[in-house]
Length: 112
Image (tube, rainbow, N blue to C red; front, side, top):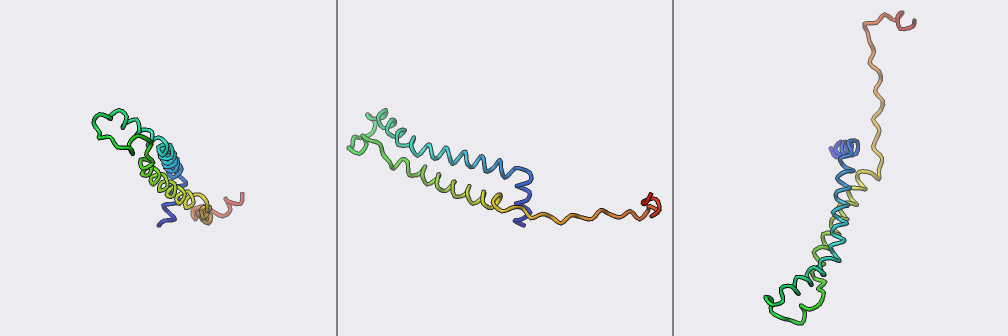
């Protein structure tokens, strides 16, 4: 069953499109690893009057990057497993089917 699914995904290019989308999402989460702490810092500075002051809230917080790192690592692992399953091993070739014999033709007509 998995071999038939694999063959359908590879031959119809749906697997390649899905892997491309998954890789794009992985790259976006990688970029967000660096953007999330800066976003949190800007948000804390904008809302300074509403949030009680604490010394920890003045700098960049790497805790904001942790969820993005987990998403990045998970998506990268899924992408690698699917890439390996779909494309690293060649598809098994079906044996060629013999041409059907037409019994309604006269053998003398075939040889002429």
